[in-house]
Amino acid sequence: MLAAMSTAPLPPSSRAIAVSRDRDDACPGSLRLHTADDGALARVRVPGGVLTVPQAEALADAADRLGDGELHLTSRGNVQLRGLRGDCGARLAELLDAAGLLPSHGHERARNIVASPLSGLDGRGVREVRPWLSALDGALCASEAARALSGRFLFALDDGRGDVAGLGADVTVRALADGGALLAVGSAERALRVSGEEAPRAALLAAETFLDVRRKTGEQVWRIDELSVSSGELTRTVGSRLTGAGIGCVPVPNDRATAGGPPPGVTGAALSVHVPLGRLTSRQWRTVTRVAAGVRSGELRLTPWRGIVVPVPGTDVAATAGALARLAGAGLVTDASSPWLRVGACIGRPGCGRSRSDVRADAAGALADADRSSLPLYWSGCERRCGHPRGDRIDVVAAPEGGYRVEAVVRGRPARTAALDDPSHLAAALAAVTP
Image (cartoon, rainbow, N blue to C red):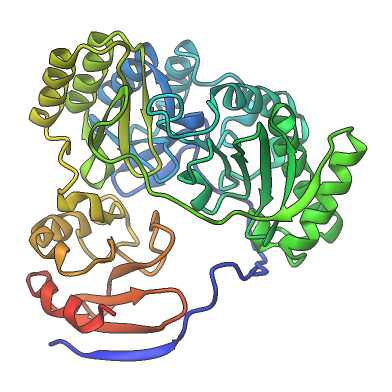
């Protein structure tokens, strides 16, 4: 059965939503494991998505020795390990510590930082953000106050191209061509212009200001846009805090122009691949690490779009082509026209007890129909829609009565929904809801 209907217009994504949490932040980390239906789950924060080859190998070892042998990429460029034994916490911490992935146990869940993954590799950004990343992560781990940030609070460091600036971070720093930077908090319409040299310190002070306001209002919220105080008012408070700390700042309109993530293939001095549904076997993961070691880059960069970038020093075209072929042979997407780039899914059954369906299997089975809509598709096992992308999309949500509900989520337009009894009929449902 297929039935389409219109519902009320969606609220603007910039609208602040006051939220009251009735429990502490239970976001998983490396030291605080989450119990799922397929075992314990660890979320390893990887600031900027940057991993050295030894660190990547350590994660594969942890997946093989302690988990189910798979690694999952998140929408923040972090790594999840699943199927962990309930008693492996100490051993996991030991492995991650030895690899340098836990520089501060008290801040391990707060180290949520995304950064432009192609920064310094393709000539498009106006500033290399690696120094910002190192400075912010170091300052974050040195801040006693920052221990109180939730595991959901997010920093974004954009090199000026507008890729991670569109990810809805709590604190966004965007490089300007003249050497300055825009500092934006939440969904505020106005940003603060600061010097590029002061940008990392300003970002941390913005986060600490959020914590101060939260404490004064007594609100138990995790993210800036959940405060009852508007993001615009918070921006003014941050400006006063920066001025008091000796950081010059000027209110300016927030630049909201955004771009997408890296396309698969060779781009600049880098190889880029997409990971279908964000899931890799340890064998696939080790293939990537061997490629990174083989091209002598020494690192790989995980992207918030569930991809991996491998920097390629030098201009050896033959070696680059061979490395890309190895990655494609491992089952990773190297073709920019692949429908996998437009399809995502939560973990679904059997890993999640809330899920009503094996959404990953259904998403893979309906892959051929993904091109029937110009919007990305995201499959969810329940209404929580864990990991869904921001912006316009098609939500395919498992329904309580069975089957799915398909909904076009388009800013400024009435929502259109259709019931879908069988994933093989996805094309008809997309035709019913696509604007």
